[in-house]
Image (tube, rainbow, N blue to C red; front, side):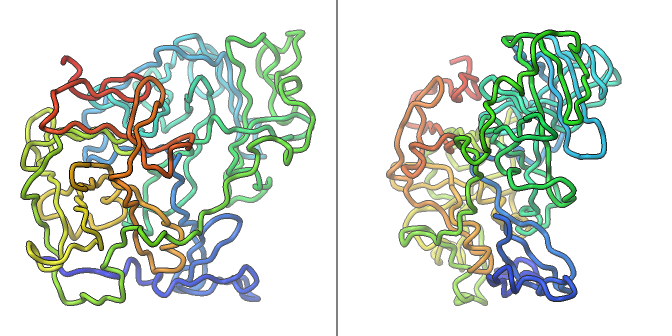
Length: 464
């Protein structure tokens, strides 16, 4: 049996909101074991009051690295079906000339200052499925030695951008996992910003960043598509890398009118959502004043499991047997759907709802995987409805409730809407969102049919 744990980190306890004026003392130190809001981010101060760390929860639109415990094992590399960009320049510092690359239509590098000619762009996949989730493609550069580098480019509806890691230690705060598991999903929302007389594209979350601030990303870029006329590829220092003899002006000088950034539609980054959860939100009881301290948390297997398969755009595909065990290509695995209760079967569920909240956990791993990370791949069973779990009010929970977790409870109110090439379920709050969490669910009572994502890519039962 496993003892419930209420504290996330010893130096994050008693986290309270402080105004910017109170955040730092005269020596420039932060207030120990506190969390504050600054520049649209959540910052956590360590227990000694020396340094702060960004722990802002990743945006719903963020691209998420699949977490199936397999690491890079079994990963294959897939080239783009079609690559739309002729050339791209990008830079994230003010101390060098930046990077550039020229491509063919298949995404092979023709010329570049970062890799040899012939190096292809590749997407990490496992069993033919992308390991980066969120409806956009993430490509890395692979050289002639078969060395593959970290994510380099995002392809989103024919928009190409350099990959931007989500600058947050949220995962470490939640689960002591110090990996970059998220990338910005805002490629299509990139906006122009002037640098030394020219305009380049930036991510909206970088709009307020200033050169020389080493704590922030300042990535900017220009991209030239095959559908565009050939024109000089110029960096922010005015140096020309490619097509320097072309008579066409750079696209940065013609594509964007000379207006203020503030007047550019969609140019302002979304404010940090600090709203409290609604009254109907599902809350985890483990954080309610430790009222159940002393009781054990135990894994409880479902007495009835109706879901054959569920595709979650934020977590991937899951196939089950009738007992709720996760099925892999090799057959049953030790990962199963479990409900966590105080006092075991017949006890009190840790979520204050009549709905059943299941997490996918390896057997006996509750103590290790008890976190916001595990619940992101959870499943809600509400009567005849099954939905993926969706965390809400994460920033509020960190700032005001010592890290409390809240879930969307509107599974039974889910709507089916057209997304891309198909119809998918979404939570009602996201029916007009540009990047909603969407899903498909197939029950054991249903016929077995192919499960496709919004791009028409088949994830399961493709031969049916």
